[in-house]
Length: 181
Image 1 (cartoon, helix red, strand yellow):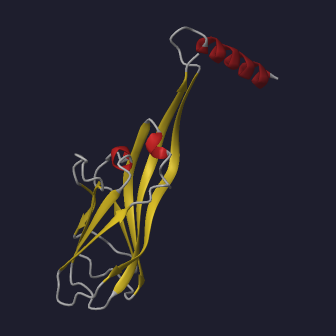
Image 2 (cartoon, rainbow, N blue to C red):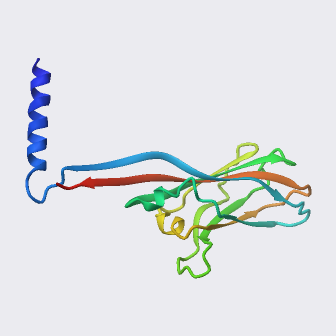
Image 3 (cartoon, helix red, strand yellow):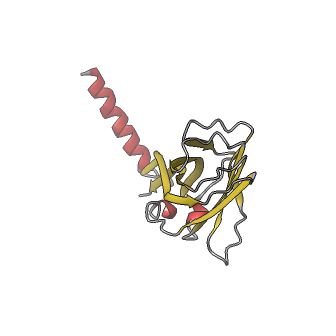
């Protein structure tokens, strides 16, 4: 019974504050789970004797995050996950890796950003390579351009065989919503 009375009092107090001029009726901050853009079956040609490997691809279908781009919030790049799916069993050859994001809109003035980076400390786990974000960068402006270009750069003795990989570029969402009387 005591808990019920405290809850009712808090509710009346909270609603009363919401009715004051200049105070929002509802102000909510939400942290959502990670949202990832996935690019499956990216083919990499054999590159025997090369010590650098570069691959560029484009996320043109941003439907998975389209609604997030409309929010007034913060969407930060948090990690890239790269999985070899055929041709190789391990990313042990990777000494350094860099993932650069840029807008796919040729008229965009957004700078290219190195968002995921490892150099000598990549620590691949078999056929998987996890790269944490190197800086907290808001992804919303890039998503609003409707196309994102990803440049992958690997350093190390490249495999001689053709192989494929899946790439996930993951973001964390923090958004707010306010209702005023």
